[in-house]
Image 1 (tube, helix red, strand yellow):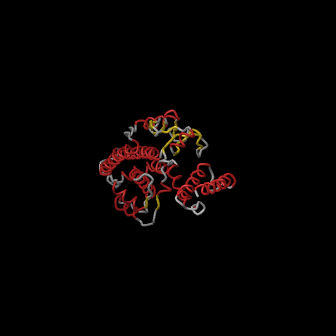
Image 2: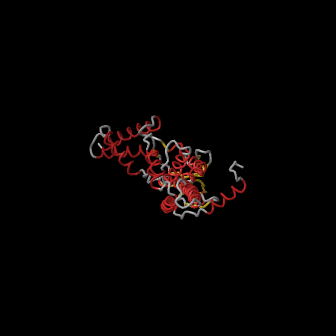
Image 3: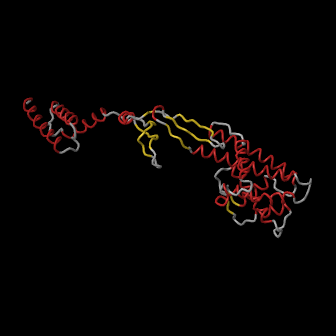
Length: 321
């Protein structure tokens, strides 16, 4: 009986080998064929017909293959010099298994980030991957930090100019804040526009800003400079709101509340005091947010001050030279 079983096994093994080379499919390599043949033979030794044992043997083979197949493992960060980026440049971070890293000759490493201060106070980040190469660019955090830094500087600049104008006014002079906002309106408007006030401020028509204007400035809507003062007030409040919430969108109610908070009103001395406190509070909050984003202290504004002075020396009328 054993000899008969061996003959039948040999016949079956021949069929399996033929199917393995001609048909592909499940029996697509020698190791699977050998495992399956051994499993069938084992079933036959137990007294079972090898042809009847075909399905159990398939299941047994699949289990053995599963145990013998190495696991892919967790994907790791690596540097691939051949990766093509969206901008057409080459080299960047990919995620690959240990097997893929070895096969492709990638450099397995977590990038070391080096943040440097650029001329003008902005930041740039360089990621190095050991011997794999470097990549310079702006991460999301660095972009947020640069925007926060620039917005905070511009807020300080226009607020300080407004305070300087108010300091030159007579003590208790009614209308000094109105005149100062009127004269600085163009400068404040240009700065606010550069930070997207036209896109990120929406007047819902609630009349909230007009109520603040009439209450705090004692200025009627029919006044000649009402529109200019209102526009300058909105833009200054927008800059303050932008520092508080970078990238935020604001309605007329939001801006009205901000105008109340920063003390814009007809009394110049009171306006100076509240405005200074509001600016200092935002400077502290901006410095904390900047360090959270970058791990670095926010640079002083003297860098941008110097650039502003140089620009004014070349182009005092701001004609774009």
